[in-house]
Image (cartoon, rainbow, N blue to C red; front, side, top):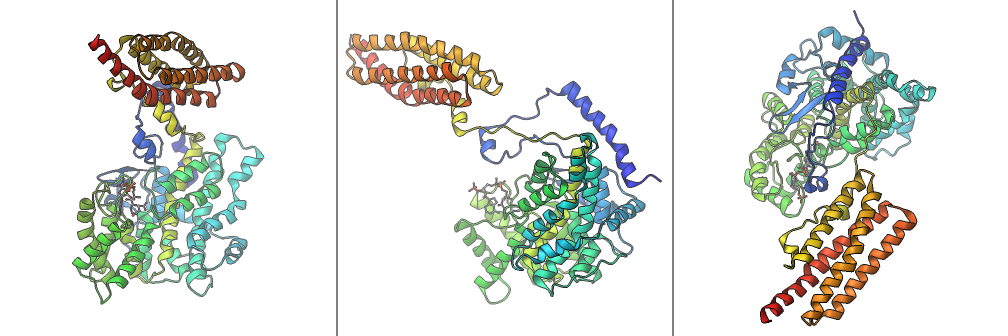
Length: 567
Ligand code: CMX
């Protein structure tokens, strides 16, 4: 029987061949355009990354390796007598792309159990932190404390060739996943309980052991954690926790550094922290409303108050999804089956009835439907895990399955350093400077020169980004030299001919523009085409169009028309 690692190794060459084929034959095929509004809204929707472990459809939700969540709840192996998919099986699916058999799950469990011992100094490091520090800070710090054990970093220092680094990356990924339940459980126990560590039970699965080490031995809680850890494992590559892990990993930072960074991103209220905020918000609502179970009308009123005071309704909306999150639906079905009469669940269910309509009327959120965080906390709460601040840690343990799987693949495929290009607002303003009729002064020679200047500016911007700016700067200065000599002289000639009253002021502005051009040309001759120079030239021309051409020249042209008419 091939080992898990051997099975993974066999998948690498076919995948590399597919990618090489694409790059060799279709490397120039365009996948996406980027608009200015996308640039200002977090590159939302721009297809610019690869992640094979899962893909998110705005209407259908997440598919792990092509399988929908209901399919996987059906197909993934389960514990004897259990109904929930085992996260070990999900890890096998995420990293290999193949549906695991029972023995594959057993192999992963074996891989985890060999590496599950957490060095004592990690607990000591945690003990050095105040108990009331955020559990997410503790999780991130524990990962950094473990970083010294990284096989990846060790092998990199020893000079292991880059294409072989995936092996120590896999070793680190398995080591982290193996240790996470004990670390998360200890964070829980030292923050909220007696601080005593509970040893792992070798007969239990990954999620079951997490529940056990947290101090929960009821079968239902193990099942709930299996479901929770299954549902939060992956959400394609662009979400903040996944993207951060991969971004940091692209520098060849090891999996400990990279995951710790991803966990820090997950701690944000717009991301994973929303699951604890939902319960906090419901708690505040109950306190605010008082007297027992809130009615539908009272809930509606509270939602409006939240929105009208400029706050978010946590657990609703999504950057990609445009329907109810299927993770929400899976947890709702679980709650409906197991505890439909639970007071908190009833509030969550009422929120599902009222919030989408309110968000639609409010008119801001693109997606009024609930995401997973709207319900996940209420399930944990029902089973007695009532420490809201800890919920994001469970999210983080789960998310590690997906992001570490892809971390390993990124090294397998020799993933490049991520380095998108940023631009300034000034750059975008220059880009949108177009010739249009609003700029026309209605005098053929003058308009023609201005159109040509806009073209020159566009050539310069294009070339600036392809690294061939000098040639266009020379052309632009040659053009500007002619412009200041002929065009401005022509304008001045007309002004004198028709006795334009603001002649002196207009001439003064021309002189300033000439001086500006000369100063920049001198700088070019002295230092060459620096980035600063390109920006200064662009700004000079943008200013010239937005102030001089569109107002001063227009005023002059209007005067000429009247003067000609009179003549
Ligand atoms: N309550 C109030 N306003 C909301 C809202 C909500 N639940 N969801 C979106 N909006 C607002 C946004 O703040 C934004 O307002 P501005 O234009 O004033 O900035 C506007 O609607 C448009 O936002 P959007 O394009 O629909 O959503 P984004 O892609 O910018 O953000 C998300 C997505 C999830 C951050 C946002 O819906 C939100 O803040 N929801 C509440 C927090 C939450 O549940 N986060 C968990 C997401 C899942 C996860 O990662 O765990």
